[in-house]
Length: 134
Length: 466
Image (cartoon, rainbow over all chains, first blue to last red; front, side, top):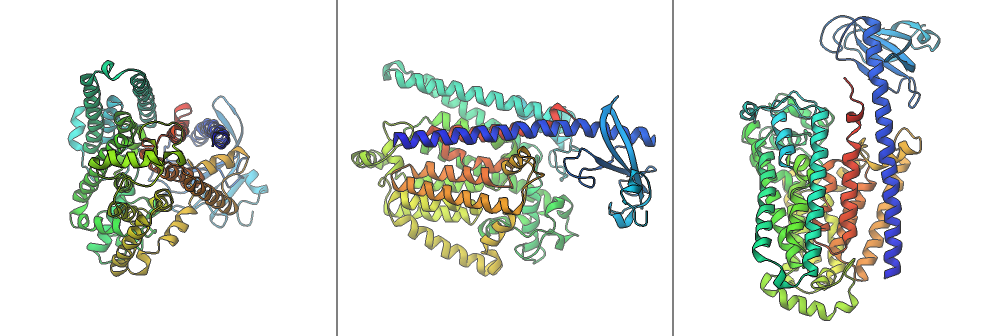
């Protein structure tokens, strides 16, 4: 039984090390994501000159793990999503606490960010065919 | 620990925090005591401080246990021991009561419990067929978490039945009722943990503090009034029943000590270890009740039912199986009569919930580690297969004499680690079992998993998003 116990303990330690590595990796990853999102929020506010709090962040439209985000928020004061939305495609390195805006589009009020609802694409969003008919 | 808990509860009473779910104003009287709105930074610092203090306290208590083991009875002061026990009980009671007095913390689950109860008793809707969206006009609906408004209850029929009386009390009354359920269940769990640890020759003060002053237990489980506490109370009741009456203890341990050569006690050996693994100790009726209690626990929250095979194999008696079967038939019948076939279809509910993925789950973290965006369906199947293998291995070990209580704890911990839907109160399941077993690896593993969970919460501390 002592040998069996030794094997079990070794396996448990290995599993523990693996879980610890996964946890630390995830905390570091999330911290980097948060740093990037802070820069993205500042970028949206600087670009639009609106100091809004309710800005939605989408990390999947431009691809997971690409570090490219889409941020959408109202173009005039109002409850979240209640006004025409301006969505910005943001990526690149953080410089002076901000990242570069490469393109974007508009959305009607209370409308989810689906291709069919987008209009007024600009910048790289045109070449990416993000709006219908663009 | 007390300061961290008071800080969290007072700040939470001011509401309007991302950590505090929208709720009726049940703790406004605390607002006059000070505090500021609870933000991630304050909460996480308080949680880390609580965790550090808890770890230090366990180290001190463990050192005390070791020192006592090396000293002679004459060197051990009874009055000092009594004083330590009294202070430990006072600490745990204070932590429980502070959280009880405050608002609901972290989770919206309690409002789902209330919604399901009100669906049944106020609106005549079967909570096993529909989600809370069927009672949009009910005052509790606005408090139910957005992710759960379309989801029928996954809890056992017995739990749903015991929540039904609270459905009549209105939302505020029901919230206090749920908090009272959680507090009472916590008290029962802690008393039973204390008694079982003592009966198994382990340090009862260490066991009490390890469970009752655990930060996840206090802040998340009690703070959220989670029904896992009721499950834990029934689980520890079942373990206590297998130990026999206190008056029978000496006889039971003598019998077991005689057969101790074939019984593996885990990490250590010594007085009482034989009782952990082998049969004997409790009467046939108590063993049958123990099996019944596990099934009753399973009818509250299904997870605890995994204990039954280990109990049957470990005790080498049919009594737990018969008791469990009778409880299953009666409980299943009651569930069927009140809720129909969906009320007892636990497998479907478990299958549905096992497909969920939470950001804190270890499979999700492992997926990120290898560069995947998350968990895929094939991963779910692999995880289920791994869990089944672990369960079979532990059954074999139990058959060979390993402590069935420890094996049950390992299985519950394995469920946590392999589950893609992991929440703080789930990683408490194995804790009361871990502190009443001699195989200390289970306690270390449980605490390590909890520590990793706490560490995983800290990302907003290093890079807050405004």
